[in-house]
Length: 391
Image (cartoon, rainbow, N blue to C red; front, top):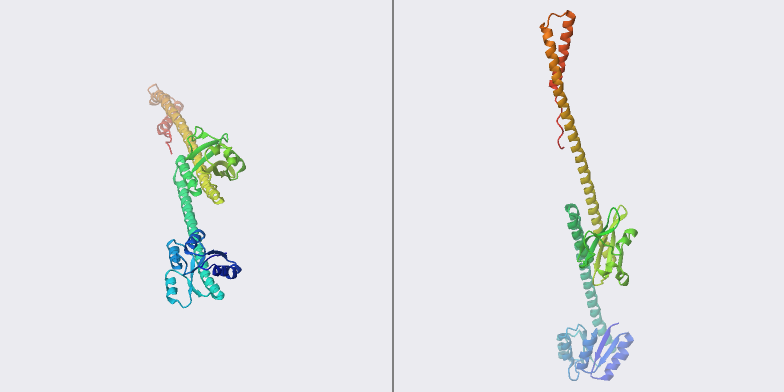
């Protein structure tokens, strides 16, 4: 309910206004009988309306209004003065009065003046409230845009960066940004043993256990990899865990690949500032990108290993083919010698150098020479394939 400050030089008038007009209307009322007291009261309580007589002892009503305006007080002011004193009313309006009520006071006139003044007060408050809501909405919108921009940048980094160490650092920077945290770390389970290993950290304290690519159980990650559920933790429960040596409040989300937790992404605040559901959701979005990066890296490593194995098998086959080809060439060279000897022995017989041959013997010698010539041609035409080079 609105607060009304009544300032008149006559206590009887002040009490009359307060008891018969304002309190029955449900307003809170303060009363003062001089300008100095009214100024102190107004600065202390910031009333919605100041109903002040212009003829106050000491600090006059006009001086009071001027002093309140100088102090930046936004109370609506209603001046009380003699009826028909137009010059005093004009002065009051120039000093910022919203209305002028003549004496002797009339209840209906006073209530109507207060209603008009309070309508302006309420309207101003509504405008201020709307302005605050609009500012808050704009601030939230700007934050959401920055978050989306950050996530889009991470998406590009996941596809563009091949160095996991650099990518993990980028992911942690994004995690701290979207959650407004000041410390973070990434833990992955070893594929063979499942042991949690610290893969990357941001703003971690200088502790001997906190070394990248070394085992570290923060007391949270093992639990999350079993449960697969995100959590926020602070206070004494966190202080009892190793993670409590790093931060006073944390939000942690598991990294899931094919419904299996392969690691944990943690953001923390050393001040103990709590994390919201929104922070947890944004961290989960960053964790999804981390999973994509890790799975892609593991697939790439598996592909490289497969390619290396295929290359090794190919090289071995090429070497074996080379040995086989060289063996065939040596066999061809060795076969040429007996063929040449056989022809050397048979050709003098065919020429009659060793005496005459019967027709049957001559036919046998010619047939043998023809077979040897055919074999020689086959050896001459034989070219073993060269070993295949790398494809």
